[in-house]
Length: 176
Image (cartoon, rainbow, N blue to C red):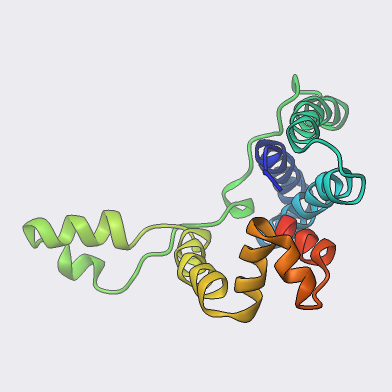
């Protein structure tokens, strides 16, 4: 499945995260709700393309257009700020994580700046994303599931011959 709808999923996820963080004050709940909203949009795209064998580009473009319109309309209805979410308070956002020894390494000419700017001082989602990349590579290239998932895109008949549901794996690919 070509993921043309990625922009729509990002927009819906960002809108849901900002809205939930504004109302609950918890960035973690906001992230979980944003993931759920993005998964829902991905399932809509998968339903159109996999179950009904629709055109992936048309479905993805429709989701992008729908997301761009619906988020603005809902934002106007909820916040009355011209389609924008309100500015979040500092407590409603993820705070940067300062690692140990920042003050100790800061006076060292190159090392201090590199440690402060590149290694330390990012929010937890940044560090989580850095861990997800090698985990995804391991999942796709070192596991049976990854082999089947890649085969569904290349040679679906081979996966079907092995007795694995091509439709089920394609839905799982949409979710990833």
